[in-house]
Length: 97
Image (spheres, rainbow, N blue to C red):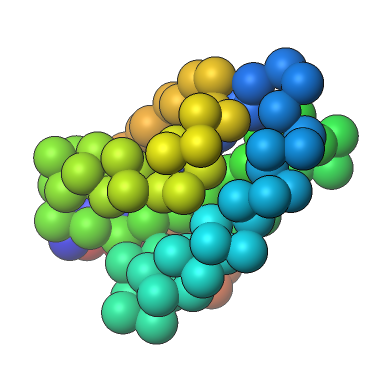
């Protein structure tokens, strides 16, 4: 399993659409957290985006998951940056391969 840091950048003027799709987005995230594929997630303080930490087989699985995000389906994500990440210290370090 591989850990990935995913950064979302929200589309300008997408606040209303995010508010509308947020319940479905959070329900989707909760399901992924329950099955162990999402380790952590949350919005940035400035509201411009979010950070999500996933633990999945590979980048192909990650990309398939991200396409299912209600935020992606609502078109509120302007950009996504995915990076393979190896946590070495702290509570997430136990998830490193």
